[in-house]
Image (cartoon, rainbow, N blue to C red; front, side, top):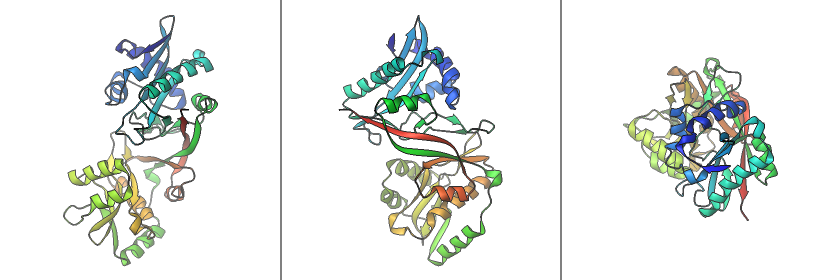
Length: 322
């Protein structure tokens, strides 16, 4: 029987998640983390959150979300998860939950269903072969999951593969090649260092030039409030960033991304920014870093040079409604 969300299902859904979703590497849920990720999210919609029951037992859980203020939000709904009990993982049950989410998307006027990293309901997962080191968000569907195969059959198109990469910072050291690259940039009037509000300016213009609303909001707030951010500057004008430099309680180095204003590309600033970011994280006692990048993104070579290895792959997927 299909049911829309009711709080009475909370513990049963948590139990289901901690039995089945963990098999795909997702972190276990607690009442607190379920509340934070799902129920208290401003994008939570109980009419787009479904529980499948059989003989009054919860055998499936699915959630989608929407928001016109999200990237692509005016046309897309985000598919967050579909989890089924092992004995209930049939095509029919997957389809029933998926179609319920898609129907809700269409009721809200959305033209497509997306599985990608812009989803505000972030699902943490464990990095394989580590002491439960974790990444804060799954950027798509794990390619080794049953859900991935099902979505392909349902007409979802794989638009990109995201490589999840990991580095234990004990193994990081600044290569001489990067120091030489930084000296060359210095000679051209560039510097790469932690942002200093007393010496640096132009952050809003730099961020606007990168055309990323999430960076514009987060990095703008960090530089205003004093959270460390590594920046590239030409004179005193900020032209790029990496960060923020935040050590999370679990030992992970959290950062939003790296960007260089298009007018200042070609000086190796992106590479220098990334290595200086790794150095900054190590200097504050950060245990490890994790990130994801497109499998065809040339930046993957920069990450590999720093010692990162691909540990998992996720698919970014979309289905357009006819």
